[in-house]
Length: 166
Image 1 (tube, helix red, strand yellow):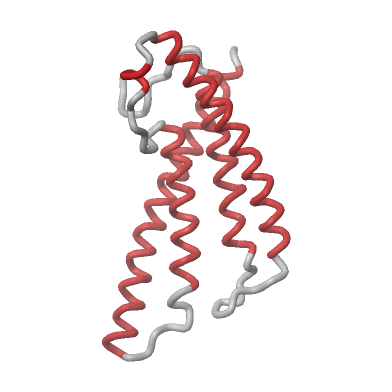
Image 2 (cartoon, one colour):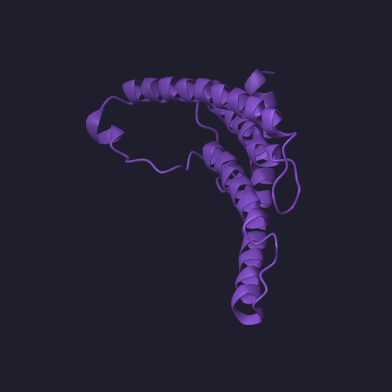
């Protein structure tokens, strides 16, 4: 059994979990913002967490969704490579090199995010008195998920079918 056959189900599970959590986060964000707007403009008494909590949820939601986008290769792209490079073999080579470069950059970003998160864990946020590092912790956690997806892409000989495919 190849490493990819073991890694692929794990990457798919992590992607689905991150997408589900991002969906919950988006719904929660909408509810928090609607409640904050109502309290500020209708009641005249905004909640003390009106800025901090939606910001925390937004950051985590965006980065969790990025894990799913990385796994599905659905990030925005210009789509110019087929126009500029006619050879499928060269396009595959460029894609592999890009995947490897992205993996390296994600691992470096995960390390830097980990350092920043632990550096700021002793500080607290103003309104909620949560460790400030909780916001920054989203970077190493989600970059690790994206790196897992990149490893899955790199180890695939042929692109594996995505969830919606047969």
